[in-house]
Length: 386
Image 1 (tube, rainbow, N blue to C red):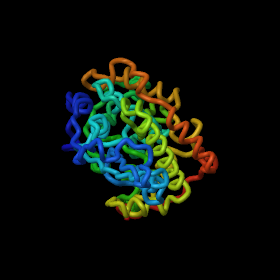
Image 2 (image 1 turned 30 degrees about the horizontal axis):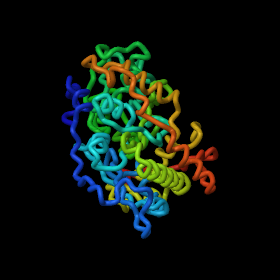
Image 3 (image 1 turned 135 degrees about the vertical axis):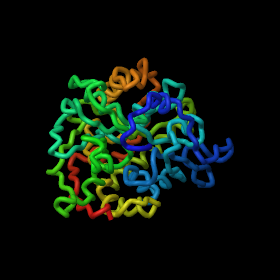
Image 4 (image 1 turned 90 degrees about the horizontal axis):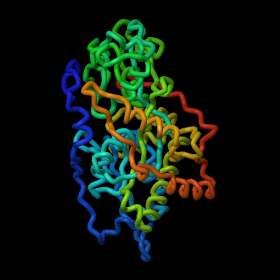
């Protein structure tokens, strides 16, 4: 991203949908054990690669916890977590066969599927959206209806659709606002370049609350801000999911491996739910550069997107939420008039077959996969997230 005051370019959608991913990890040879069902007769572990959509942070704590606690190993898998970055499009890395599974937002992948990526959502880990619109109270922005005539920050690159749908839901067009390309931080809001900024509950919102208010000498407080939650607006879209290779799922060994991978991953997320402080430390030790209080905030807020599960267990893909995501992807236009997809996705875009089996096995083992009694912890943010 460049300067925070530059408008979003007309080629954003084409860039999102057409990027060719740079993976940096070698494609497996046919004889390296990839696609196996949990090790061979000698007890060797099956190597598996998981592509993240961003750098190590507690947004992905469940996968790091599953490695740290030996849950993948218990299923016969040797999982390597591959960090993402600005040049990495995880669904394209997966479609190219360079990794076994990938984590990505559903709307972004729907666009890639329409462009030919043969991949399938096999576990919807985040049940709720973490996207917010954040402004200072004195801006008087309490809903997308108040965006009219304002400088509205957006990251673009496939992250903007809930915001656009929320505006259109309340009768505000893109011609009614000044759309400003925002960096992946809160500097544009702090510097007054935007009136309302895009943020994730688990990251950029915390960045703001870790910053000193020059007028008070204290950290900014939630009561100084207006926060728009797109879950409440009604335009939330499904986000972090586990994606698998569609054609490979026809192979019994890969299908069995997928159940094992989902099972261990959900067990990892249950560990994060019950041990957020330990989970934050695990991710820090895995290479995250975020401060300890920020990391704990992220683990706690990510838990809120997963727990409690109201869809029959973590990972189950709720048909109503899926349909809403597809409808927004097909019916919401950006500033160029483009939509994410032009037609409904194929039936192979998602399945509950593998997560259902994983959940059954986890319940049989006594793992709580609904988290009905989940309560988030209280996290105190330190300056700069330290």
